[in-house]
Length: 192
Image 1 (cartoon, one colour):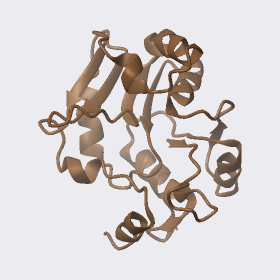
Image 2 (cartoon, rainbow, N blue to C red):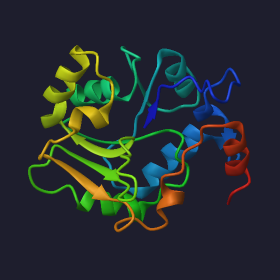
Image 3 (cartoon, rainbow, N blue to C red):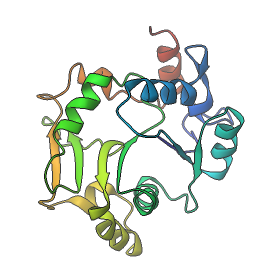
Image 4 (tube, rainbow, N blue to C red):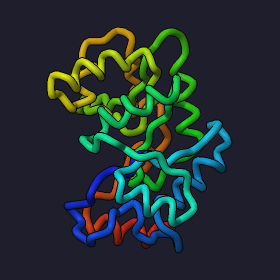
């Protein structure tokens, strides 16, 4: 789970991932949820130095993002540690086991990444995706050139599987909802 942002749009002085929702910090809630899925060997919080300290204080297993330049270098660092990773943003509280299984089922063969894409807008969801070490060289080159957009780096790659969101996932607007504003935080806190 990626927890490297600074929550500048919310402005609490604390990262939204550690804001209390569902009677516990969102990061704890999501880690417990992911562990409960029993789909992954381990669940880590990949975080900035500051957020890693908060994660450790909460008893979570955290890995430190040494670059802190966004998701692309974060995924690149993870692929240097692991052959394959499922990456999810820390602010997506409504993920479900069934939908994660649907994504994982689409990642067969020689693909180096499986990334959900909205068919209506062509917008990618790179922070709810599977990445394999085979894409690390592409990300390394992009990062060296100053490109930080995962979408731009993977454009045109045949080895990346784009998974049609509307035709694959149940309740996609809920599944891919992420918390960015104070109003959204309040909405999540009132949701079951």
